[in-house]
Image (cartoon, rainbow, N blue to C red; front, side, top):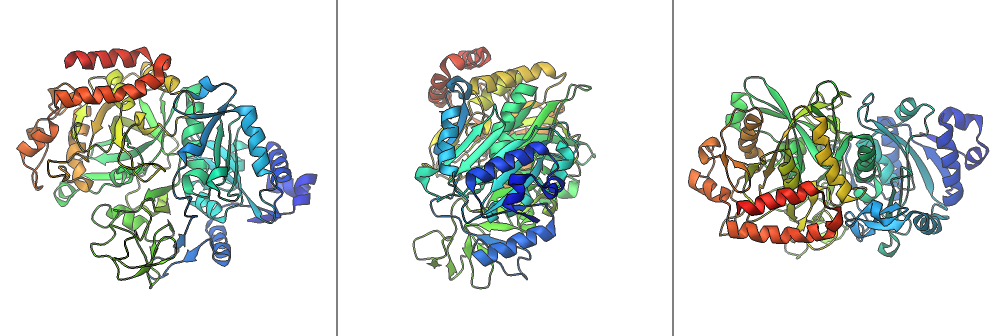
Length: 602
């Protein structure tokens, strides 16, 4: 961590050249310093010692609270502004010369007008503040897809979090060398007013400007902003894919290892699935699940083999806490036991933290996520429903050996899933790639607290990417169909729904570690070793094809959960029309054909 005098930046001193060897970065930094006028500039170079210094500075200015070092060594609590607790989708824009490039599902701002508006709010936004310069790399170093970003921010929380979530520091200079290809990320918390909040993406300029928010998804610009919105556009241009998907490795008792990529909307069990621990009966047989990534996958077709491969561009986890405990996700609990940032959780008197669902019995008292006294009978949540943890990938005891391999992993199966209480069965397989793309594109899920807005409404969320597609959704879907032509043998595509409820409103499927039972069928089916029956929606397992031994679910209950009601499915098709009407002339012809085939089966 080096302090750079503002005059050095304006004068492009010899010392600045040694610290920041890339001239394009130096010139851009000088322009942004002139615009934002920080009091001082600090170049972050990564590493544990530097991170400790950032935490120490954050404790001093109130950004962080140190937690109990015996119970949670190296852990800190951060409280965000109460009006800044989730992704602000209404304030998120794709900024292009014409609206057609952004498409009908994105908020759009004309590129020049956006820069003009942003220059006004960023002008002098860092007066009296410190600007942190964060050079970072997304993706394993050496990967053909690895990308460099430079984020300028006035947030200590962002600086410390980016050190966890990305490969931050001098490694970025080594990757980019003299290239001018890097994502220009400018961020200021500003006054944190919702009325002056902008998260703007400029895909043609490979740039992101974010103002007025300090929350993770809006402020950690390497995550959703770069790794999905900007990267999805780059992938469209260059022939690869950036997807909102976990990547897991599954080892069977015979030693065969397969990798799956799975897309779930935020707060729908993605991290739990990525860190799945099989139940005892499966572990004893030799089943094991390992984590490559829990949120984002960059995928490309190997030119030599024709197989789809994937890497996790991130270096850490930014997961939802409510409901996480030693029973639902013991891997996550071990991962966040040290060197972790907790955001918007309750603080216990002994310096530990708590959130709803962590323990069966709540604590007698605590300070809630806003720092106010809390008791179980006060009528308020102790932790925010979207409270989060930020933890290093290396903390994960189930980390896959290929998690940092630049060659990535070969994808055997792709899984789409949402949160649906009815209509959609627990699992089915798409008939083929085109129908699988249709199933993913028409994905519906009940909304959660991960984004601002109403909770519990069914929203169409194509590939769980609706908030993260950085260009026209019609082109995005066409890109999915075109990717198949590059493959000699495509991954099989499946749809799952862990959240189906019975007539009493109870979840039918036990979920969590028991999901290995469905995953077993998926893996074997992908290798041509499992039976399935043809149904209206796709290929489905018979109750006899799923191992139900040891769980409180009999074959009849599973069959009921798998039953497809033709009338309910007709209603689902009608509900999909909202998305289809939005797309209108942008709808790929393959989507129309797949829909017509499904209707004909009804």
